[in-house]
Image (tube, rainbow, N blue to C red):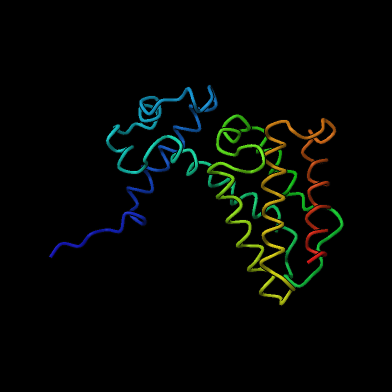
Length: 195
């Protein structure tokens, strides 16, 4: 009887996907996603085209996977202040939030492709889902009122503001990541208090 390795935990799969993600991000550093081809990505990653399609349906699916780290970074940045889940949020945003926004600005062309104005698109949907779940779980764990309502409001607000900022739809005085972090923080704290 032969044993099969779970493809989600197989180290070869993990390495191949990492190479494909790196290849895509390197290609997108030179041009927009719409101008990147599967051929260029697999060439840069050093894998075959068939291998690409074994793991991803298309370049958008690879791009969302490659950008998953930005989702985790955003969720972590918004919750970086929490050492005690029952503590009130500080008046100033955690430094990780401005750092996250600065990093996001560096990859804005790729993120704009996947995170549409208003927070739609495949990256926006993933960011909203993960941020909502983390916020809901944390509020529920400390017995805060209305965890689902507040979590939805926080996730929708952050995702939409981030998307609009990346698309240049916010006022010019919010172009600086530190300044935007301050404003986002005020919004999110108000939403938590309103709940």
